[in-house]
Amino acid sequence: MEKVTQLDTFRVISERVGRFDVQGKTFLIPEMNRIGGHLLAGVFRGFGINSKVMETYEGLDLGKKFTSGKECFPCVVTLGDILLFMKKEREKLGERFDPENYVYFMPGADGPCRFGMYNKYHRIILDSMPGLDKVKIAALNSDDAYDLAGLIPKEKMQDFRKAAYLSIVVGDILDRLLWRIRPYEKLEGETDKFIAQAMERMTKSFTKHSPKKDFSPVLGDLIEIVKEGKEIIDPKIPRKPLIGVIGEIYVRTHVKSNQDTIRILEKYGAEAINASVGEWINYTTYDQVRLAKIALRLNLKRLRLKEVKESILRYLKHNLSLFYQYMQQRKVYRMVWKYIDIEEDHKIGHLERVLKKNNTYSFEVGTEACLSISSAMELAHQGYNGIVNIFPFTCMPSNLTSSVAKPLMAELNVPYIDVSYDGSFLPGREAALRTFMYQAYQHFKIQGRP
View (cartoon, rainbow, N blue to C red):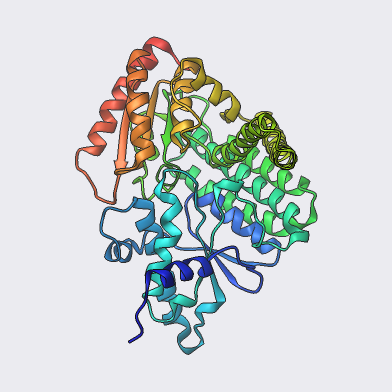
């Protein structure tokens, strides 16, 4: 038997994890944010790429089978998703099953976070399965603000990126519409049905209109949905305590992984608002602007003219991208605000200034802790009645968040709770959330809400 060396493993990872042309392939997207994932798949289909959002969480036992329990929980969930999908495809297609027809999308992140290693570990597991070594893993990374080079043809890249970003913003708005309506719905369960239908409508709209560069029809469809959604609200129900949800992006967003925490909070009297996916995308672009400015200063001091030019070009590229993202995001939110009051996103630069004010934390450290700590502080100062930090068990950035944010919230007399998940069901978890909501309601009675 041929001996497999460590060098072979590194070579396989470099060759089968990266940027691959996905045209003519079935592009598999893991479900993190349910609505945003389906809208993004709609954008891919609009550009002629057969894209599917995989069934999620049903393969959790498979994910656990090939992990030790020390991995970050989203790694286990997403591994189970891809393994179950491939198992079902093989059973359905039989001899027609060809693993080379599939590209699995698993992006990463730079810095001290295990997210950047998911696709490498998934590669090792897929390579251990007969035939699945042929399944390529498409990986984008936060260190270049998720540049699409190599994934989408160059001539389509700019148009695709604009449509993809809009799909993220619209997905965030549909989520916020859900959380704004459901605590005040006239009939129980009506909001969930409405949002599920809205997701399908907007997915079809993105598929139809994304390549046309004119997003007016997409935004028109969104506004119709917002108008219809507002009618579900019972105006006789008084406003409830406002709870801000922060934490690790996958688990706080993936409803099954966090065991529907927001619904539990609503059960005990909350109106909860989760941090958006768009916030993370804006952060990665903002961070590239920040790093380009640092590089520019250093290169000017050392009189490295070639590097100065490169730093300026990099700064301009990412700054223009950030300007476009903010402009597009603000435009869509303003359209929606004409009909319903949903919460807006924070500007990333403002969040950094919040941290710098009292030297609380630094963007130099990186990770989602930058956003979670600053968001907790900002939401507390805005008058929110409580903060919930949702994260995978043992998550380093979220434990950093807890160590900094928890005492800060205590100083401000704002109720705060950490809720970690690893797939187990703890009998005391709901009791802890119920106790937290009691505290939040007391804060609400004294302070009111923003």
